[in-house]
Image 1: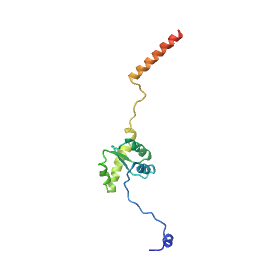
Image 2: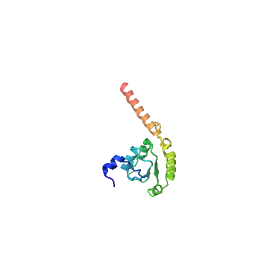
Image 3: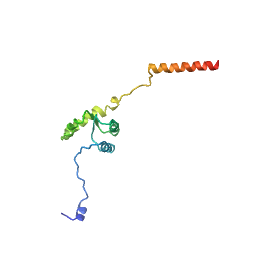
Image 4: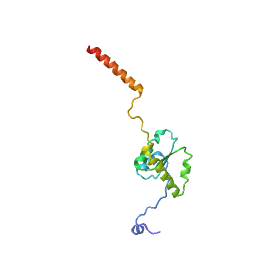
Length: 139
């Protein structure tokens, strides 16, 4: 082996290319998504408590990372065992078109500022009572 000063003079430190690694844990995955280092986020639907992972789809959509909610933790093994990069790339593209690109379509828009008949009747009753009270005060 060469002395350290000869190694330093000949070539700088060249980082080695690390293989893709599967990361687990909400904090780790959140950090990777925020730094845009995650390529795919897969979560199980049966997370307990659900508040731990409820924000991940929104964060992934905001950062442009494909995400997928899979039914059951056992099905995660199917994606984990994919060693062929081409197959994984196809899965990522399918997930991106099915979920990320349809984000606005999938999100439900409830309401529309329309009151129910019961609420309308209650408001009418209150206004009628106010009008009656005002009429008794004035005359």
